[in-house]
Image (cartoon, rainbow, N blue to C red):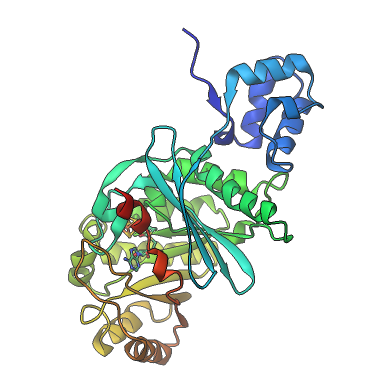
Length: 349
Ligand code: SAH
Ligand code: SF4
């Protein structure tokens, strides 16, 4: 039986080189193939004339390319956000969002189809876990956004990636890190590693591994509650990785990487947005090299909460300032196209 084809986009440049050498061809061909795909956006074998025919025939019989056809596309009324529902080969759907804030283009990409973590307010959590994405399926989302920009022809390129789409990236650690390595490869899309931000619900072993491995990507940690009980009510996996263990892991990361952590706090009216809540966050994070990103809730079908209003959000921010904690209030852009994580996929199911 013929072995399954290898997915090109799952391979780092080094893995491709080894594969090509294993087939008995020169590593020069591997480098040229890599450049065709990642620098010239060519994925048709017939459009690769600089590769010898014998090599092309071998590669074509052994390799496939990840293709993520657009199942649905929506543009926000304010023009800042484009959201894509992309189809995987097994016909599952994932979300990728192109965001244009402050002149930079950021892709918000998914790491899993669904999510096993079950955060109560999150549309992806409400749909449950389907499967991990392969590295190539993560890479292909970024390529999709970059291609949209190229086709638009205004000279814009993808500069930032946030792993804040569907899924928990540290639950799919190896594929996510391989994808990050591919996207940051200096002979490819060449994203600066500091332009990649990974957001985690607080998978403690993953944070410790990231701290030890030392990839220079930004880390964001979803907090939402400043006591164990309050957090566990919103984020069920807090029972597995309690708040004190999470804080130890974060302090370890900051010390080891000499890098700031971004904490995300979804502001839910009457739930975690009072002055007392803000003081609790202040006490918890005081002294850490940290920034807090406050995100007013995007209402979802499966959760009855409402977003905190502007005034209460500003008051929250003011209290954090007393603890010398910088913070931002994320603008709810693209709300008209259900820009919250997992919301487009849910509305289609
Ligand atoms: N699984 C990772 C990354 C994906 S979620 C994580 O949880 O961090 C990205 C961010 O969006 C998280 O901070 C998450 O708490 C937040 N989020 C999810 N659903 C939301 C909603 N309905 N409204 C506001 N923020 C939401
Ligand atoms: Fe999963 Fe993140 Fe949604 Fe929680 S917020 S269910 S971890 S995607």
